[in-house]
Length: 75
Image (cartoon, one colour):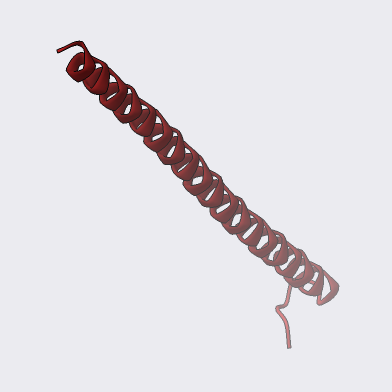
């Protein structure tokens, strides 16, 4: 009977180790996915910032052209 208990203890121990390893791998996978999402969001923010800067530059250019034309509009 003692041998049977020993076998169950070993089996339970191995099962617990497997659960811990699985949880660790799952945590690693989730961490990698979160980092990837953050990278995507940062790339999107950089793209939006470039578009804002380009639009601002175009607006300033247009304002300068209107000013240079004496406010009569661009021809």
